[in-house]
Image (cartoon, rainbow, N blue to C red; front, side, top):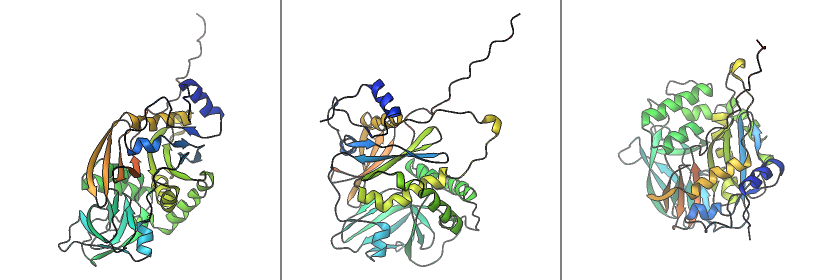
Length: 353
């Protein structure tokens, strides 16, 4: 059984000890919903840093209820059991997803790209497809101008950069998504007549660069890793938490690519503005995640066999649940704490008058 750790001692331990830091505390009531029940058993492990991106891995100290017999989009397409197609009357904002498997569910992650159809798109939210089901899901357009082609899609094997995911989580309009797509294309040095985001993230030099950056992170992830908290510079920006190590492992490349394609590219800065700043600590990450205990957990839209839940508070986020008891995936998009700021310089005493 866990014992409560005084906040000051926990802070000191996070700086001195290389081991994991627990999120849950024994002096609090058990989690009130499927997300906090999950966080009760989540531990924060030492971080890995690449450039201005730092990821804090999470692992579970106790097995939680698993979602068995589930495939990712890429796995399902590879096995030929997922068909993605335009509606009979094609719409930019929706498409049809058919799970042909008789005994496996399919998990789709918000931000995953689908190419083909009449226009390349991305998923607005997570979804869980029941075996033998047909589900219409909401999409964003990530390619301007094209509205022609075949009636079916292929999986791009990629995900949008984190900035686009953040806009989608805020239920932004299509114009805001296009603005973020344009920024991503400039950052990824990709130009096309249709401002095609899948073309940018699948550009060979970008694929190689992302692979090289991931190789500096993956060996640092602990055994049984179920998710990560992302830090850009000195600011906690997001988190992705998954039901099981297997589900995270299957989507690890996409999750890391979403962060790296947003924060892994160098940003030109003026040398005169560069000020050393303290790094985010494991205790600050812990407080970020513990904010989920104080937020409102609101049931939302049904997405196939799963239901979306909205976390209203600090941090805000969205979770996909199954049968009101299993947390499939949670995405926390906004920082829950203020950026860590460097201490103000102390002016030197002037000459005595």
